[in-house]
Image (cartoon, rainbow, N blue to C red; front, side, top):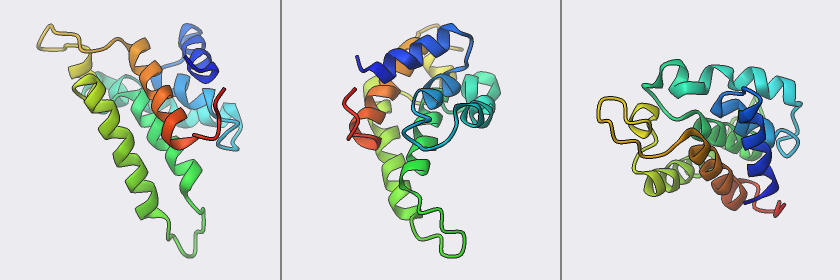
Length: 139
């Protein structure tokens, strides 16, 4: 397990939601202060606030992909395709590993079959981030 995955799990133990836990563990790699990332990620926790939608850990991974790959050029936004491709790969890998990227499905809401714990989702998202978003960071 990478140091960043460990930091994300420590963040979770402090009370961060899944999105905050993951995003804050990589804030320095995304060149953005941790408090801002914490605020940005808050609404993405618990499947966007209610366990119905995309897992917060994977939402954070996609947010980090944008921070990493976007040119940030407001007058010529020409990096969307690159970011979308990276985001699609993140979601694909997560879903292949866990059977879903939807919080309620991962938690077994309605099925009573838990596919993955929040901690497992956080760890998986960190592994994917390490492999394909910030693959230069082997810590």
